[in-house]
Amino acid sequence: MHLRALIVAMAVLLALATTASADDISVGGRTLSIMPPEGYCALDRSNPADARVMGTVEKSQADRNQVLMHFVPCTELEDWHAGRIAVYSIYGNVAVQLNNGTPTATRMSRTDFIDGMQAHMPTLDMKDIESEVNSKIEGMRLSGSQMLGVIDKDSNALYVALAMEVSANGENLAKSGVTTFTLLGPFVANTNMATAAMPGAYDRLLAIQKTYLANLVQQNH
Image (cartoon, helix red, strand yellow):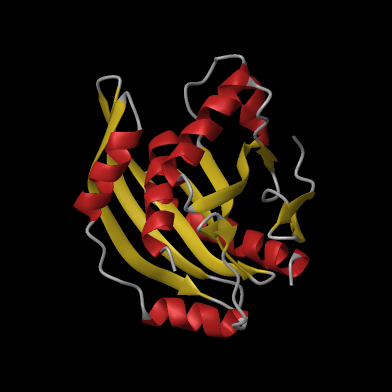
């Protein structure tokens, strides 16, 4: 499993930070029903500002993951598109893992997959990941990256916390993120959400993710 690729992708969205209806997306010859969390809207590639963020995240994942949807709070989209805000308060995405360009599928049950991921969570070299991400993104640098470990697990997903600092435009910003590991249909998938580091950030992201994963998994048995 390309766990490293998922953590690299999460590191990129930590640096970045349409109505919530489901899109039918073709993945590996099957159709997945993908929607943003309630209150969040999907970014639109036809919008230049959205396309820039989508392209940066997708470049970071290259041939390792297929990003199915990017999403941000619906209440912030108008200001973002008008240039009245420089970043969103929360950014998220959904992706499936790729193996030689093909979505990774498994015959494992979701329960066995989640248990297996928890049992084999590796010790990653976050400095190495920082170097890889920094080589792919211009105008910002990551530092102080930490994988804080598993913060929750339920029948839908494994939930992992990350933290790091982002340097951009002369500012150093602390970021918090929660990424999940799950199966959508037979496909190995993850969802990522990130926000500015502040008291309660992980609790907030985790609560959103748990509700979101319950809906997402239900739509994609």
